[in-house]
Image (cartoon, rainbow, N blue to C red; front, top):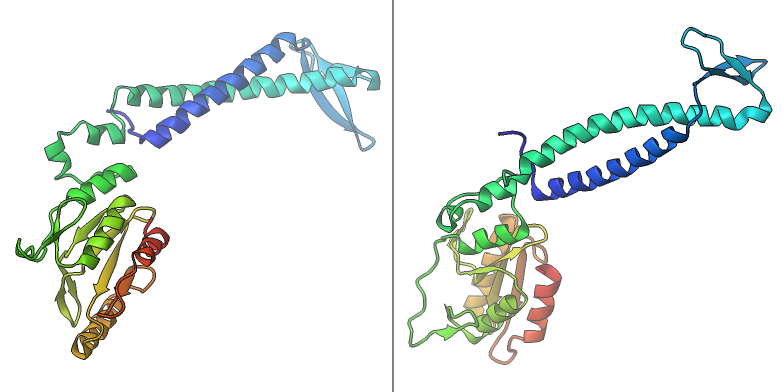
Length: 270
């Protein structure tokens, strides 16, 4: 098996193939019209002097006066085109080999795509498209809290059981925006212990995990104190508010505003 490349690099290689082919064709067309011989340049009185060499053993050549400047120019272009064509030919051979090697489906992406769906769930590719990364992350197994009792459960758009109307709002907005999330995934915070954030969302542009905690009993003093301790523990563990930690709040008299949830999700996760 030869060198494997990913789909993006393979695309760039094919674009480079086309570019080199275009330049090679232009160089060959110019060479077909180029004058005979080669150009020798010397210096006289601080100015370049041009000579046309047409005989193999002639090291001096015939002087080109100012009226023959365009001949000198054509000979210089001829030498450049020959050197360029030689370089292009070498590059084309290398690129052709790489493209041919990967055209059979042996690219980095194709190796993973060739696995069965069950094996894909068990394997972490070295390079992944956003689609594959999202699929693997969303399908991963994780430890979570026991789901709420069926009689007390509320259900989201994707059919999972959650514990409150506010969680339904958040889950449905994430779902509608196409933002992958996990519900109540277990997480261990140093010096605090195990927690189960309401949502662990995937911020795809950076492939970053973002915690979303909704605190819904802010008119309860004890609950408020516990909330502050929990937020502090998140911050100590490196989850920064507005970046990798999103918090929303409500009380009996101030319910969660779905419009605010949507803005937060779009600004911080999408």
